[in-house]
Length: 507
Image (cartoon, rainbow, N blue to C red; front, side, top):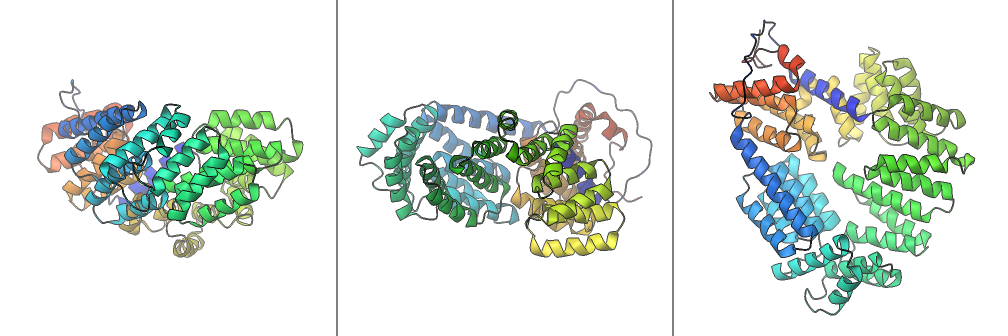
């Protein structure tokens, strides 16, 4: 579904699943004045300090001031108040940079709960070496990574790594040597050293991804695709790491395809996964003029890209052209299903979802059929299908969210489950805050709201829920200021609620 419609749907489902009742009562006009505080100023100062310091450390790392960056990151970790969301986000980035001790420090600070366990497993599966080296060696290797990736010094850095005894024969050092050779287009040497790394650590997906890319660039498609199959067999539970694997897959398919049109198709898909959709559409629009036999594939991907970028008319145009030419094109079928569902043309949507079901083993069209049955008021059919799907795909984000329509009483379980899959889903954190407010667990609600603020400081619901938490704690002035901020961001929302009224107050 399109990003805008998906966000609207998630917000609606979450509110519907956890709202007990609202009190119909005229709202007094709030006197809006200059804000001396923005909601909870302590929270804002803390989060803005963390963001600013983190951004500064990232900038230092990219400019090869790696020791200073390490010290900044380390100081930030020592001083940061407990926040699982922030710790996970930074833990992923520290592992990417090669600061594995800092990533480990963040992971060790995490609570053991449903939010964190999937991410901890995925971080280690994707990035971690077989063993940690000393802090001095970690900084030395991170310096090499910075030079290779950000400072166009692959040749010099690779030579330095080869001539140094520092960090011994660690698999991560071998990976960096391979990366340096790869970036300087010395593919045979890159293959030699990535093999050395994999001999020591054959389950590291980052290493396997680089080997697949090297083999693809060496024009060894069968070997590259074999490595890709091994990568795809590794289970990743979180959206972040699933997307990393999908990105690697499209890059390898781009490099190994023989037909130019297929190369363009996979390159465009790769760009789209890298959030470079404009570049992707340009590649596809050029390609379709050159290879008519692949036009259904190209049109269908254009339709998908336009749909996910909230251009439904273009999405329908290109998906329809693709489907007319090829009734077995899955992307075209699922895009047309989603467009029709969004337009409340449910019978048409059902037809396309059922067609898409025959073309894939993925859960997406099954979820589409279930939600469309519900929209057509075929509740029993919908519930039966959701029950079946939840047994088979209990970690599918869209399924969990959509199922709230049928099982709103299970929000307490499903919302944390979604957060464990996609920690950057802001609507889920707001939904969890709403649940905590219902249960009068205001400290936990504040924690969830802190995560929401970190993701999006301008979300109007954040300020509304925060006003409820502050009012419950007796901070009436701050609660009113938070509600004022909410009204400035979305006046229609606050016009429907009483400043002191929780959505959980019984009539």
